[in-house]
Length: 305
Image 1 (cartoon, rainbow, N blue to C red):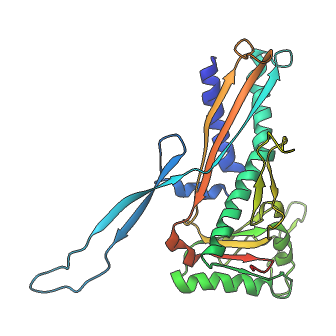
Image 2 (cartoon, rainbow, N blue to C red):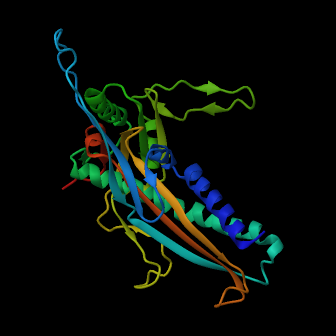
Image 3 (tube, rainbow, N blue to C red):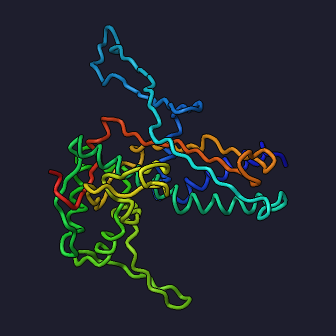
């Protein structure tokens, strides 16, 4: 197997892993109509049309128009890292297995949490700007269900009972599952008598539970090179607020995640060391059309101002 084939396998597998393991992976299904031709730009379809008009028995139907245009968006998150695997530790026969373990762990522990964190902070910050967020609420077992359903029905009041996705801070999910307002139906399985009390959704709207570290309104993206940031990755900004939950229509967030290029160099090609060299680069971003924010609710623990 040559180096080009190695790279092709890695690109396919790494993109699959992001969708499968990211708690926000479901948002990528909305990118089906997005045009991506490589590089850092995507084109999002914008559809507009005229509403109903009067039917005239003499002249017939009122003329209408349908306009399909594309808005160009730039993938703002351009991140990367390079790794080396010493020739003595990895020969060609076990390179795929070893490199797959290394890169898989890299994505699982560092890349995926960063992508999730960016997406949720982006939705929250945009919702604050668009006045679709509320702040100053510390959830408690006595009223968390009421607050959650208030937000759900505020969306229903605008758009009807459309399918929603509730993204919830893991700490708040624990409070909800112990809520004094919530009547749970316990199911006991025959094998071992296991009792399941997890709340998986509200009124047919699934709840996706997310680690609290990924539910902040703002992050610092370390460059991995200077200023004591050699470790790279992200940390919550000192001014970040805690997101309790995000409620969006299933089709609203448009997330794009591309492993734009994985370059692999053999030890003979690597000029710096007698080692395999793996260059990893990731483009990703998230967008929400302006008219969707009236059907989005973000609940934040701290006051917004």
